[in-house]
Image (cartoon, rainbow, N blue to C red; front, side, top):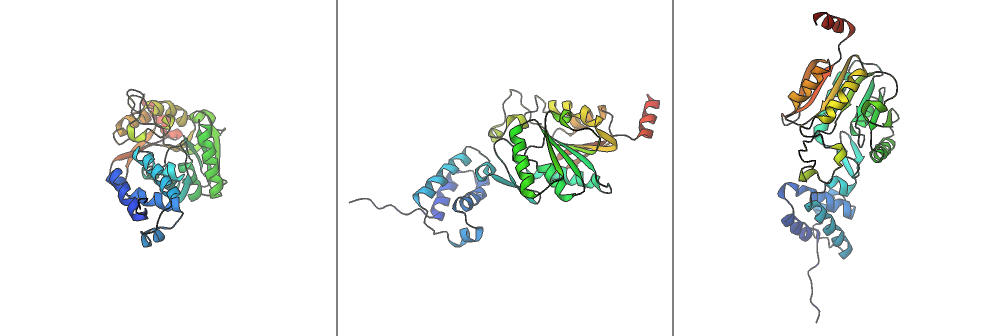
Length: 293
């Protein structure tokens, strides 16, 4: 006589999965089930006794294995919420994080009162920052740069899905890829992870190294981009950079050395230093500074 096995239901699979996955990631399991079964959260909660087919169970088990290996949920789902958008992401792009919305907020505040502002986003990845700014300011012209053609393909797709036509993309290294003309604002979420031995922390091992590794102190790429960014700013234009929560002093020092004034640091929702910014002096301020030297 063949053995009878208990059918695998949503609740049985979820309970088994919770035993394998760290507690802080348990909420991700429901998203995984919803996407795999193509059901709403209401349907998920109302029918925990739904029996899963062997094929669905196998698919969920495979995805659970990836979660246990710290693959970001966004890569498994193929998308990530950011700002008021749902963005396509792949392993060629960083997963947009809520901390980066602090940079969007700060940029929009500095764009207040400007008519048809020109903005450059350096290292755009999936296009998250550029597209958020373009969506909130339809009158703005946003130029977004990345040196990864694969990442730019994802950013192009996101722009098309959102129907945004005021964001243009360019492939190249920081400001060298930008078209002619100066900008009211230059923003960047550059690589800033400290990599003493060239390796990323385990929690980031599945994301593109090119978008994360910032050298021994995490500031090597910031040092590279700042001089060119300052040159492309209009007088009184702002340069804004996202960075690690222990890097504000280092980034502010780089901005100061580049001649920017009104240096500020903006905290994230947890109160940690997250974005540093500075303003290019106007001609009168620059003349006064030269006279003081």
